[in-house]
Length: 230
Image 1: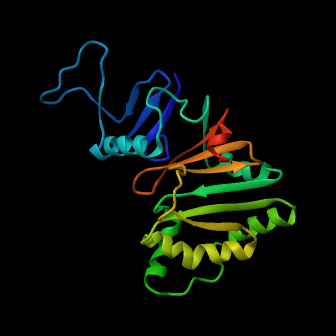
Image 2 (image 1 turned 45 degrees about the vertical axis):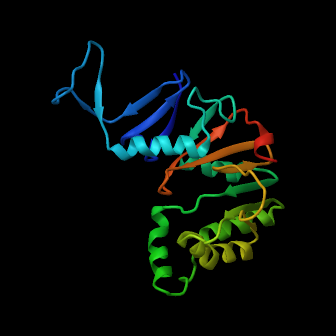
């Protein structure tokens, strides 16, 4: 049985909800055997988890358009990537890397300190996002391209304003080709989830919880490229 995590943290040791290739849901949580009102039949197990994990699972399936009958919503299979595996996709690509970025907010631990500084009205610290800028410059100097489209709707979210003030200008200066797509008053049906596409052939979907925390990164093994290159 193959599982796809649709709610929970990016680690493997926390409460989570998965969708299986059998069209069933699998729940991970703390094992309980006794509770008022609980009656378990032979072979059954009960687990306890926060209600928001269930609610986030439902929301994630609705927002992403995921197929609850299996793991074939946008490809025949998927491989969940850890951080190192995902990073290797950048070192291995030969020609182009392109991201579609559409979440209204991202809740990333590494950004929280800088986000607080931005809220206070302080200038961006020296070397802000320098590691990414160095990588972008190395890609460009090697003759590769890297870019993204960032979708927005008016009014902008706080995170989008932070991106436009502190993140996007430096990325562009380093050599990343970034376009802003305002979805207000235009007739488009864009994807509802983030993804990277490398060399117009390898696709990695970025799945986020409704609060902007990263759920997982899944590499599509046989992606329908028409859904990503349209």
